[in-house]
Structure formats: C-alpha cells, structure tokens
Amino acid sequence: FIMISRRNFLKIVAAGVAAYPFNDVFASNKLDLKTALKTERTLNMHNIHTGETLDIKYYSSGKYDPDALNEINWFLRCHNTNEVYEIDVRLLDLLCKIKNDSGKNLQAQIISGYRSPVHNEHLISLGRRVSPNSLHLQGRAVDFTISGISNSRLAHIARSLAAGGVGLYSRFVHIDTGRARNW
Image (tube, rainbow, N blue to C red):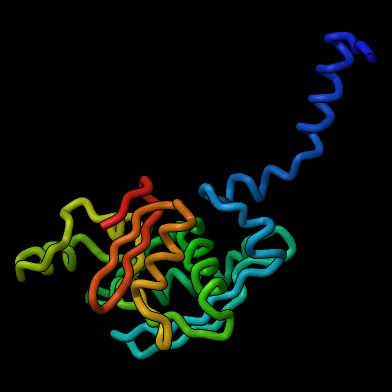
C-alpha cells in the first residue's frame, strides 16, 4: 500500500487537468462528440423552402471552421425574411450525430432552422402550434427529416442522445439544444 501526500496528489490532479482537451468538452452538450464524431464533422443538407443544397465540413482537427459556420448560418436562415442568425454549434453537432447514426451518405431535408420573430408571429397568427418563445428564434432548433429514414427512427436516435428537446411530428422531427424533453 503506497501513501501519497496531499500535495503530491494535488500536483497529479493539476497535471491531469492541464493536459485535458477542454475545447472539445465545451463544444458538446451531453454528447461525447470527441468520440462519436471523430475529427471531422460534415453536414449534407437540402432546404425545402429555398431549394438550396449544402454539403460542408464545418469541424476538423479540433476546430470549427468560421467560414463554414457562416455558410451554414446563411443556409439555415429564416426562409421567410432571409434574416440570418448564428446557429448554435451544439445543434449542428447534434444534427450531425443523428445523421451519422442514420446513414452517413444521407441528406437532411431542412424544414426550418432559424426563425425570425416576424415569421414566428406570422405562424402563430395562422394558428400553427408554434411557441412564442421558440428556440428557433435563438438559432437553437431545427426541424428536419431524412428521406428513407422514418421520423420515428430519427426521433428515437435523437432521444437516445439526451442532448435537448425532441419533437416527433408526422412530417418532420424537431431537435433543439434546450433542456432534454420529448413530445
């Protein structure tokens, strides 16, 4: 049995903490993305409202690519007002993980990314079941589907990650980076 002093124990802990790669820890939200998404993260998406397609690597070698993130922000803009908002990278990582678990070569069909306050109010006025405090307004939610994968399967994958809200609808799945909850 070996005894170490408190001082030596604290030195060992401090050395371990200093060597720990914090940049990946802060990028994840309850997901071990370092392991799950390896060193590259790519999204292949089609926006059903604008007709645009984007196939882009947004994370590589431990860093997010700011130019790629700007392209994604534009791609996921409010399709009604063209207003652009910064999309939460944790949301992108979550979508990437769900897409990878569904089949890496499949394209996500985007129904709604960022939603401007004007567009959100318009949807409410039409009687749509839209929250006045939707996380879409903060760039923290996306509605999507993937052709060839049932929405119930996509929702199951998303729920298993326990990384935010998951809503299953007949035509799409909603994911967000809010508290973990399901509907």
